[in-house]
Length: 517
Image 1 (tube, helix red, strand yellow):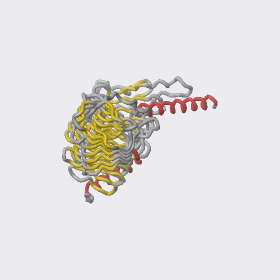
Image 2 (cartoon, rainbow, N blue to C red; image 1 turned 180 degrees about the vertical axis):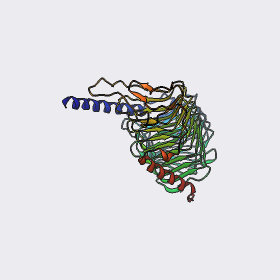
Image 3 (spheres, helix red, strand yellow; image 1 turned 120 degrees about the vertical axis):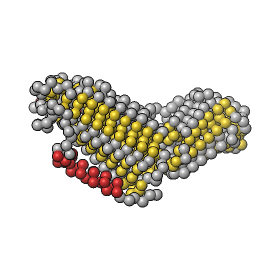
Image 4 (cartoon, rainbow, N blue to C red; image 1 turned 60 degrees about the horizontal axis):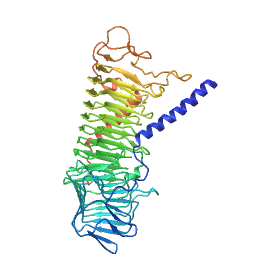
């Protein structure tokens, strides 16, 4: 008993370390305050101007009197910088105007071009960002970032600006409660960028961005705390923050951080959209809350820089009948997401994994009846357990048909059967370092058949079980590719009930007439 208890304690410690390491890897933000960047001009804390003769001070107003080549750092609160129609010109690096931990500054009527950051807000040693900043009637062109709202910058106003031909037009990095009105984003590589790659709460996304803001003439739809609505047609970008029962359909969404972003949002239908050339295609994001009961159906999701569909902490998601192809990371990636059904999708030619379930809370998911071909790996189970992989066609993937990656072998126990595998390398286990190193620690094992039916393996020799490794084998391999039966005939009852409800909800939403606002 003492031996077993010691093993349990050691495993628990290792598990906590593993989970914390995963969290560290996912959180990419740098929480150290930025140093003052290289610059040529200052408005000092006492209100003096240094480094140029072309800014005239009158009380708290600083007015350009000519075009200026250089970069400005502002150290003074409660001032107005009026460009008077002139240009602040950079050399492709540095920051046009840099503000750290400031309040009540207005920047207006200025053309800012050819910087790394046109305007940048950031936070200081107190961990407070900028607040009460107004950026109005400016034109920001040919920068890497037009405007960047750094972390913890809240209560600012971005009004009537034009962001054109930048790499990133407007970049929002977990800065809440800012107001955007009448801004035009034109021909930026990524027009609106809303960061969803660090572990933050839903409240960091509660900005007021209405449809007066446009991308190439099409409205931005950024809804917070809305319910029972349909996104108007011809949207340029869709974000749903803490929303319920929203339909997003028949949209073409391109060249943003995401085509569609759901933050702590539930019971929504995402259907018949064409989502291409964004950083991510569709994102469900809720590390501290949850996204639940959303349906992603019949979308074309292609050529995005990262994942086609990405979920961080969702449950009861139905992903069905989508075409997910040519994305630069995974086609479909679910991290710490539970009880999803990923069904009848075509997932092809993605640079990394076709379908990836990742994280120690990615369990009780069902992946069935998908066509997963010509990816690096067809399906990747990374520390994901109690999932069912059944009835899929997994073929011509360049590395492996299925890869099972268990840092701690207790994360296994997946059921994999009635799939058609036709890859040069069919299946592999990787990263199982603790197996056998601790007392009572068993190696990773999964079930490769349901007791009567296994999988079709194109390289099976027709005799005996199909061996994956010394601890895993398919006891009932098929000698011919299987025809996938109707879903209800072979899935276990709890999943069947969930699926039936989800599909019924999907059909009801597809036929239900919503009000359009």
